[in-house]
Length: 299
Image 1 (cartoon, rainbow, N blue to C red):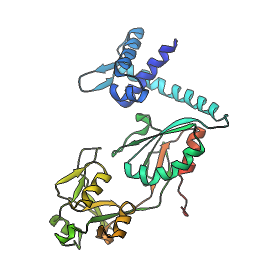
Image 2: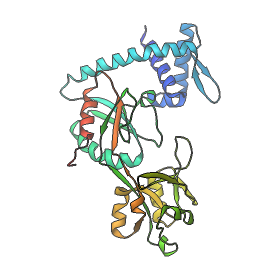
Image 3: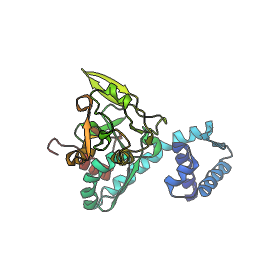
Image 4: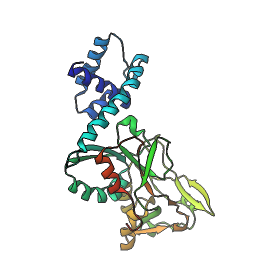
């Protein structure tokens, strides 16, 4: 097959995995019209419709789905073989794409990735901040980060952090206007800065534990954000209580700017884990990164 034929097949796989011409084009680093032209060229060459297009969605036809299912394992094998050749180089190379929430990227990944990237300058790391649970293989990611080690059977998990405790905090100024809550039930009398979850568009309910019983509390408030750093900014400006990772707000608690409440009800979450597909062979770059991120008790 001509060289352009391979690029057309890669374009088809990207559209199938992302479910979008826009996201597929961004992933491949091409324009959307160029990507659409590649798909049309492949369909004309094969004489069959591969992609069902509409104004709102993109879906594979039966022929397109069949072709993608046959192609993906073959291209993964080719990728693995090329990566194995890279492993023969003195300097490991490759691009690694990781999805995680912004808090994890800043507090866990960057401290470990900084010396890693300086040691291996030919490795490229792409960090994608998302507040949703995604199929990393379908999105073309190499790894993701989540709490706990419970995963599908085809995934490997590696612990990359200690356990994480959340805290309910508000500014000292806020508590000059409102009483300090003594129990989560009293949060209905307070204003909270809420988190909008991108997975399903809903608002995150604050989770607590009492006598080994877990329960959630719905929060009201005039400010809603889609990331924890904007929530923290709103809290510092006195717009209410927030439910945030303790290590993120501890310096502000120590300085007296924020006050932590309901400490005994806040759960301790199992440590963050890096998860990635269980493949027969991983690239040298991937193996090195996993070891760089791996959590050790004395960290």
